[in-house]
Length: 228
Image (cartoon, rainbow, N blue to C red; front, side):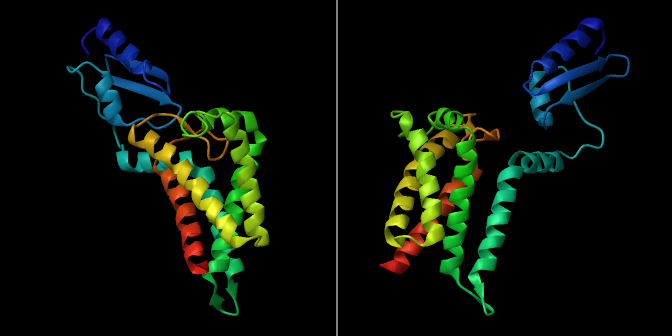
């Protein structure tokens, strides 16, 4: 930067980026101090600037920053996954033997009960978010409301071992339908909110959502195979 105009251009270009809250630019020191709500890749800043400017960072680890941001973003779902997995392992262990079917049953119960709980906190907000990408909810707005209660019902069914065959068939069908909209959104790189934890947490739609749905499909499929 060689003048006040350059300084102003750099500052305005950086401020226009989403999640940037404050920018202080100095042509004397050739520096820019940027405050942001969450991590933004250095390449994003570079792309926002005119080609004659280059931006670097002192003592900056891009990979570490991205990993930290990823963990911060998905912390709620990671904690839930850890809790449910731990309880499932404990419940599936008897007399030094691990019973996979029982552990998976408990995992499914914990998964559906926990996720339905967060959806129930703001049922309307969940339904609105869900209709943004789910193939059924897009056409039938009421499906978002119904889906939350289906998850609750499945959670209770797995917890009480009620009609395992029917429960797993319903799970396989419902989660397969759900993953279609998720796949479409992720592949099309749509930046929308994932409704897996309702409207309580602002989780972005990503491969994490695909893994979550695929895990439920795989588990219900495995349990069905063992029953047939």
